[in-house]
Length: 329
Image 1 (cartoon, helix red, strand yellow):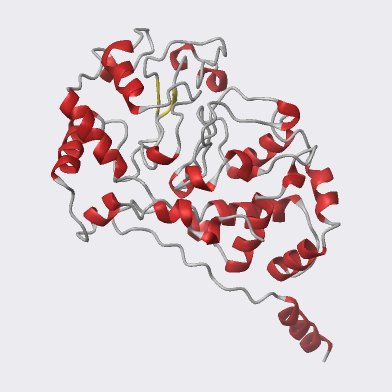
Image 2 (cartoon, rainbow, N blue to C red):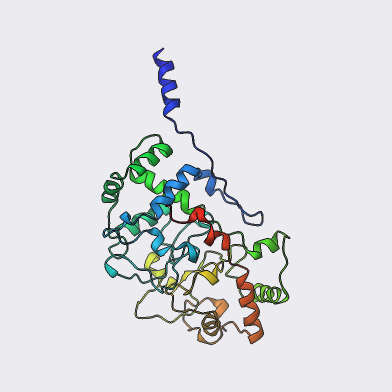
């Protein structure tokens, strides 16, 4: 009798959760991420509330969503550098968070090898959240909505770091950018205009080596010839300590460029023409410069125009406009 009661009790305490269906386009590469990190609708909603909660910052001024804005494909919009507590600024532009399931490291320099490491670093950084996880947990425990949601997702109302980080990952890993016109063309649902097709052809011949489709990044770290600024940010070298990695930064995805300017690791460029000018005549030679850029990238006026038209087809209005990803009411 006692054993039967215990088994029944465990079944009653186990939460009944609803699987969250992640829509991965058929032309995307495979990933095991979701097998190891399943998403439920309840966990997604808890992560959504945490993502937009200003109580993660020491002064209650910012949340994850402050720098990773939905309208900017979960990157920074209209700011060159990310903003933190007490009016502080970082030295980099906040990277967009979509398609995280295909990454094995995170950030412009690949410093973080897990999303949990990312959360910890942002929470503890004095120029970002300036907080610590124990204080955050104490603040969340005062909110009855959280105690109810944690119990719904995890079977008890206990709020701890592991559960917070798990819920955040359930939310952010659902940011998949795969509903653009480009994706529809790849699925034979739409066709490019003549100019878009011309731009696609230019992309394949002059950009695809680094910004490999369909994710539009190969996730490598490269020196693209940008001059060092007063920020003195040497990129990947700060992680590895190797001079061979000086001025190397992650190749960013070209998806959603129309939504996420300014561009590059420090947001120094605000328009496509500045980027084209840099690659055509502004590449700074150095021992770590990517060999593919030793002669720059030459683009005619027509090629520039066509590329911009193609870049527009990489805009994912579903990702940036869906109410399911916006701040909860």
